[in-house]
Length: 281
Image (cartoon, rainbow, N blue to C red; front, side, top):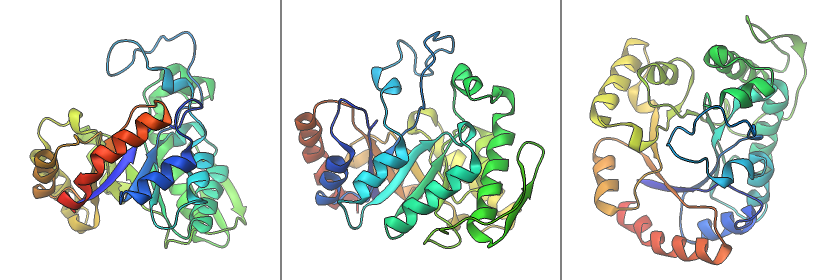
């Protein structure tokens, strides 16, 4: 099993370049940076995990800038958005950002995406919450056109543009893996319809074997090889037994999570988790 590490890359925790270097030195396969452009101070939408919204949600660096900082000081570690809020981003600009990061990192990008949960945050971007999944799909489809065509155009209900030229194209072909973060039954359908991987939060899946069975069945029904859809678990427990249990179910990657604390504390926690790399690889 591959092991990644996620952290909110904030302005008060370890720098993203130091974090990427430290994770690579300890043998981790990937780093994952979440995204929130801002948090509306009204706080009308409740935090999905309950209680007060943690400070880090309103202090994150832009994920692509942070990942490029990590890319510049590393050689092999994968660089993942975990997740990118595509619905809050222009698809033409985002396609260029993903492609640029992939080229400049020599093909190390994992493009994690999601629908988001904060209603007011989306609305501040002019994006109605109720259409977020349709918009997400159209933007991903449009970006695939940009990444794979010399002259790209897309015409959907919510996203539309005439023929354009846009380089660079991603180094990975046809494009970096698109990995959807969602734990619902509809989320599994979306993975099969237009994604390359699935990364649900482990705690949101009380029946992972059943969900894996459903994923494989839907993939076969669509004519896709179930093994071509890589499954990861976000916020995986840093426990050898639990990780091996996931591995036995067919999970390819566990993504551990760290809090956005002082650099020395982050490094100490990474040291403690590094032993798992050899145990579950």
